[in-house]
Amino acid sequence: MSDMRLIVAGAGGRMGRTLVKAVADSDGVILAGAVDAPGSAVIGRDAGELAGLGTNGITVTADPAPLLDKADGVINFTVPGATVALAEIVATRGLVHIIGTTGLSAENDKLIALAAQRSAIVKSGNMSLGVNLLAALVERVARTLDHEFDIEIVEMHHNKKIDAPSGTALMFGRAAAAGRNVDLETHSERGRDGHTGARCPGNIGFASLRGGTVVGDHTVVFAGPAERIELSHKAEDRMIFARGAVKAAMWAQGKKPGLYTMADVLGLANF
Image 1 (cartoon, rainbow, N blue to C red):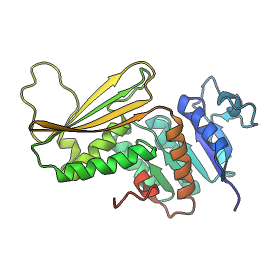
Image 2: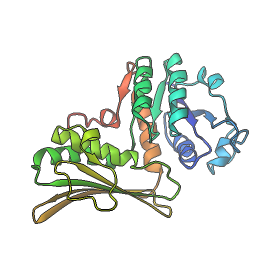
Image 3: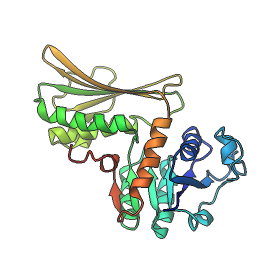
Image 4: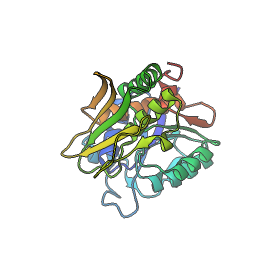
């Protein structure tokens, strides 16, 4: 079987450059193209040079359409608007689409789900093995402990991150809500300031910290009477997300159209 041909969207960003390197380091895949936003300073640059690999002959372009005819899939860690637009373009070709974009709205998610009727999409707020295993554990613990245990999710990222709570924190929140059999949107507390009164029983709390160059730290706290359980994950290198995205792309090749998660990729769906 020939190597899977992948396009990296957002190739000029920190995550995009890491993805280019991950593709180069992985067996069974090759880089078929690199795209970035129109007007980006990296348009026309060599993707390999941007990733610190040396020249690889793949020029960053603003238009993905001409590249799709010679590709099997797209890996996309960009911004919500670009992700939704790209999902539609990729779906018209029936290609694999890996989405690691965070900050997506409910409307964005609906449009991506529609695109998944025509292509295999793997979408996750975090592509790492450790995070997805921890999400499965969070759901199990939330289901096991009674409502005397309050759930709080604390996350910290670098000072350039533009959305909060992080996609990973929301993933943990959804896992906890599933374990408690509640709707996260109506049972969450996204910020506290001033005279807030007592904590609302049953809500899942979020706290977001930003500073320095932190790749991603997450802790889910189960605080009960006289005891506390904490489940944590600390990311030390963006490469863990990039490797997970490449693994997801290879897993999705040949799959029927549909919206999948990293739990599907890693066999954790029935954990």
